[in-house]
Image 1 (cartoon, protein in one colour):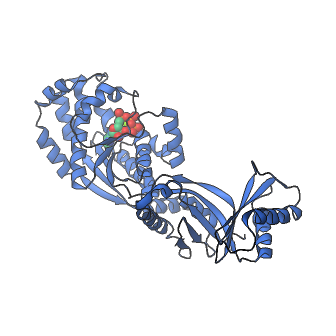
Image 2 (image 1 turned 30 degrees about the vertical axis):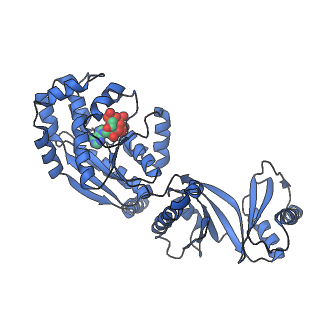
Image 3 (image 1 turned 90 degrees about the vertical axis):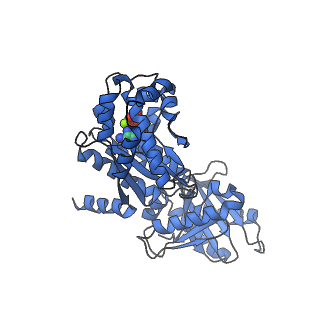
Length: 402
Ligand code: ATP
Ligand code: MG
């Protein structure tokens, strides 16, 4: 293996103008944390990208880790060599050979940051391309749609040659955009909503409502496992588990069946808003998606939304169910989400919740309840746990032992 570097490209970050360095510094911190298990790697920041010096650490594992980091548009395996043209030609040839035997066409793209270099980019493309062509069999040049683009970057101190590119997660570096509370249910949707929120640079803390003994420990375990998976993208994540049994029993007693789901959601919102204030979060994220179930009609959202002034982020609002499922597979939450344990909502849900609840009625029914006391008690008894990426890895180690 001749590759000794990984080049990290930023994409959207480069459009951030004056705040760019804040984003880039965030990104560098995240990358360094992410690569902690590989003590020999070195991360260097230059003006328009970062270079990871591998120092013998396993490149494909590191690439996989980097693909979980928001703010990275793409990464390339690269090899560093001197400015000597003979060495550049030879290294380009080796780099292409290591790109795999399926490669049939290539082109060379040279970027010459070092303007004093004797040949210009065009000449270099020809010289290097000609050499590669002459010294390999069954390979031709295709300037429009090549299997592999050999990128040669001539810098004052060295040359970098790369030809294996991998897509990054895109988005913005985590933490650059403040914090939101994610209402995490254990279903398929909310973890995906959390992933997409983090993708825009927003840190999340999880809020989960559970109703023991009507919901089991395994339902809670599911939410913990989902949180652990999401630490791959978010780093350390806090999970707030809210005891919700009293609220649900009060609703069952005091609210007509067809409004119980609406009122339950309004209470979840209020409690989440309280937790947001305690934890300096400025928004609430949910996995809601228009038209899936009774709680997710427009009138229903309108009625539920009334109780909070915080922005509600609903990343899935216009997505098709199949797109959501596809994403949940990609981010690694699907298999956990489909474990069968019951959610607190399903246990208490009436068979026919109202699909068009309205605000006046909801407010009228709520007057029968001591809302403030229920909220305070739930918030007071909320249990908070932390998860880090290391927790997720421990689980992997365990799996390997089985
Ligand atoms: P999901 O797949 O995320 O469970 P869903 O399609 O089942 O969503 P609902 O049950 O109507 O839809 O829930 C809508 C949203 O409300 C969820 O995406 C989640 O954000 C929030 N939510 C529902 N139940 C809970 C819960 N027990 N704890 C925390 N949040 C919840
Ligand atoms: Mg659900």
